Amino acid sequence: MHSQRHTPASHDVPGSDDATHAMIDLGRWLFYDPRLSANEHIACASCHRQELGFSDGHATPVGVTGMPLPRNAPGLFNSAELPALTWADPARTRLAQQVAHALFATQPPEMGAAGNERAILERLRADPAYPPRFAAAFPADADPVAWPRVIEALAAFAGSLSARDTPYDRAVYQGDDDAMTPEARRGMALFFSPGLACGRCHVDIVPPDRATPPRWSDLAYLATGAGRSADRGLAQITGDPSDAYRFRVPPLRNVAVTAPYMHDGSLPTLDAVVRFYESGGRAGAGAEPERLAARHPLVAGFVLSDDERRDLIAFLHALTDERALRAPEFADPFAAPE
Ligand code: HEC
Ligand code: HEC
Image (cartoon, rainbow, N blue to C red; front, side, top):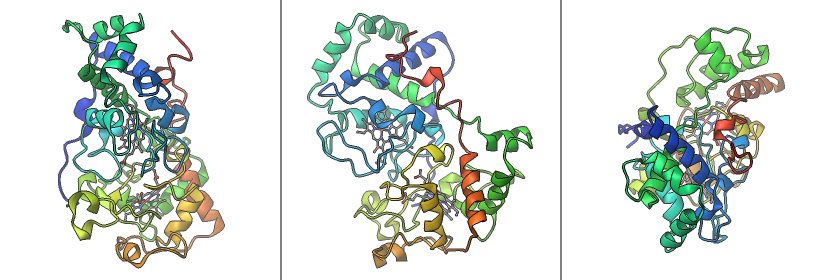
């Protein structure tokens, strides 16, 4: 299962003509607009906040009806580059699929648009600002204020969320040796060391010598032992017991701002994540034998001094694009109308 090839979500990434700009702009307004939800209280941005890398700061979020969602809300930066979306569904390859899920899912509902389709479109039509934005984004449409276009525009905005201007990227790709602090550089060496092996799985982070990392598609879903819930990860989709407790290897850019961590948000800080790996993937005394048995052999435990642990965490902080967390082109347009 884990060696299956995926179609990258990147075909949702828009080009650069005027209609495309208009589509991304429309998508930004819709992303921050709670009128898209059943009770007009929840926007995409309720669970995906820019300053948190478009995660939400909670272990697991609550949908429009107050029902909790089973999994942590991941950050959205660079998600168009991922081979598949969500923590454990290899078939969810397109941003538009995930957008439609957020809008129309009922088990449990996220935004609760199902059953309210006409009322929500009427809200958008009644706001004099929206019809011209839809018309600019979809100039060939006779009646562009329609659900397929809402979904397309939201996917275009999500696909535009790129955040790669990090100290790590400046050091590795631009040869700027001063971009990373000495602590972060020591932490990077630990990250790629055979004893810790972080870099063997987290393939969006490439070694400083730019050696070819393993392919994401080969590693997409692995078991670390993390988690406290009954969620069996990839096995819930495939039904294959050997897929139990496998989750997508998450991208680590901007990870310092997307706490809490893991598919169920069960580890509150990066310090807790590192200690979890130090212990060989034992998340507390109560870990079930089945979950422990599923762990990948690379999650075997190791010993760190306090200084080394600090260095490793400093490296994880060097993966943050500070500008993108405040970039006006990704920010709430209702808060600062242009
Ligand atoms: C109630 C909270 C909530 C709302 C509202 C919400 N999301 Fe999400 N989003 C999540 C959760 C939770 C996940 C992870 C789901 C999973 O792994 O099964 C997710 C996953 C995603 C992903 C995949 C990210 C990745 O790394 O795989 C994208 C893209 C996304 N959401 C975009 C949106 C958009 C666009 C909207 C608005 C239409 C939206 N979300 C509304 C909670 C929410
Ligand atoms: C066997 C492959 C593997 C190894 C080795 C590994 N990871 Fe992970 N990592 C994963 C997977 C899979 C997840 C998601 C687990 C889950 O959600 O249940 C994860 C999750 C994480 C997260 C949480 C990300 C988030 O968005 O919630 C961080 C941080 C992290 N790993 C850092 C590290 C560090 C640091 C090391 C080395 C000490 C390491 N990983 C070693 C596969 C691995």
